[in-house]
Amino acid sequence: MYCEDKFVEIYKQSPTGIAFCPYRICPLGAHSDHNLGKVTGLAINKGIHIAYKPKQNGVIEMTSLQFEKRAQWHIAGTPSVKQNDWADYLRGVTIILSKKYPLTVGICGVIEGSLPIGGLSSSAAVTIAYLSALCAVNKISLSPQEYISMAVKSENKYVGVSCGKLDQSCEVYSKKDHLLYLDTKDDSYELIPTHPNMKPYKIGIFFSGIERNLAGSKFNMRVDECRSAAYALKAYAGMEYGKYEETFMRDVPREVYEQYKDRLPKNWAKRAEHWFTEYDRVIRGAEAWRKGDLDTYGKLSFESGKSSIYNWETGSPELKALYEIMTTTDGIYGGRFSGAGFKGCCMALIDPSYEEHIIEHITTEYLKIFPELKGKYSVHICESADGINQQK
Image (cartoon, rainbow, N blue to C red; front, side, top):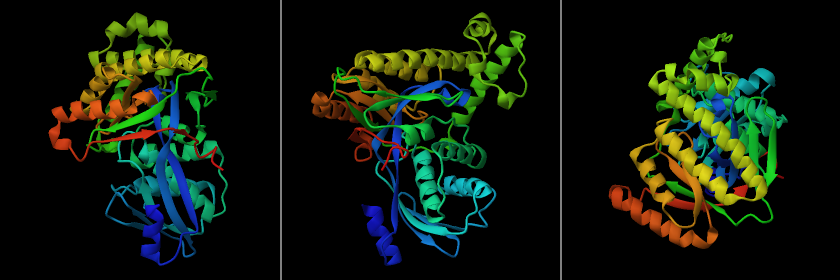
């Protein structure tokens, strides 16, 4: 592991521990968790590794192999506002952890991501991996729910990204060869095992060659438009609507949406349409997975991708091209943008017997359209994996 070698190079000694958090994919349930929808997801066998060692003087010193600037602060003096760099996720969760548990020991560490940044929730993965390392040196034991809530709060309150808990939940709860089926309203979840009669599958990750920063994207605007639609629908129906930030589409009955959707501004109506249709797709997809019907699950994932383009209105030209190529490639059950859909990557559930054909075909067709991305575009074939709660 390169982060371990780099640690030895920097500190002239071996790390005392290696923290790991997997990346995640969400074939169904995208753009719905922030409004308390249902989601399905899988952790994959790639992720964030952190080689670390305690620092008894309370200093936090983190180096990322993906970014140049080393981040450093004291555990008792973490900046109260974000510094607008890659380490803000770590600063935020340090503050949140310290409010609940006494922190006396700092940490030095080297962070390594095993895939390019964008679309696999590397921000949640690095936050959770760092959190587990910081807890280890301070002898703190967190519950799975604490890992999730602290990581979400760091993104929402400190970094300023209006995400839900999909990413963190997938990276904590997931189990190899199981589909996570999570209701973000009450945090109830089920790990649906791969049916013995299900067709074999692997996970294809197709990086566009363009990385992205979620905090700087239109992600928050889309969330606000969806919430505004929910607020308006409640008002039209005479429902009690309370505070704006405490309003969620999940609180709006489907019949209310159908009755009043034509009154909504065009963009709000599109966001609501995606939310409600995605909610239905998740329920149908979970049932298909339970039955071992990968064809139906994959088809629903393709439909989710289409709705993300036309109703949620996300997707760079590169990701849209990748998505369209995937829909006409033999051996792909289904797929969509991975993550918010602003640059980053697409994911697909693929038939392993078509692996070479899929890689060759998508690569050839994509680089015909974007030849300047040769050397930046990449393909990675992964498998499902355990989340941190399942790791031994």
